[in-house]
Length: 153
Image (cartoon, rainbow, N blue to C red; front, side, top):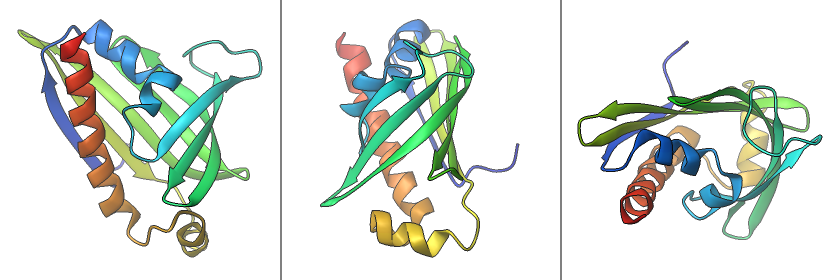
């Protein structure tokens, strides 16, 4: 796979299985992520499995938008999904969870999948001019909150 457009990792003093449960829980991630505010499984899906789809609601200030994501990875060490909006590819998000002696190392990555012509339009929808920079900040914030919640549990 090509190089992510944004990525960070963090060491978490919690079992990898607990961290996987957090990153693959649609409602739980809403309290950890910066722009993502809620999600619901679609088409009869009731949890993370490869091929399951979910609608994500996002917000940045007064701007709101929704996406549809398809789960591509739902394994104990990885949760990943491809994101689309209006039927167009937007991004890929992935959480890699690697057990360590004291818990696990979590890497959150994203790849920008937007066509060049779509990028200016998404600036209008989201208010973000530099998506890679914004996603880097968002990932760092999300991982810090994830660590706090996982270690407190």
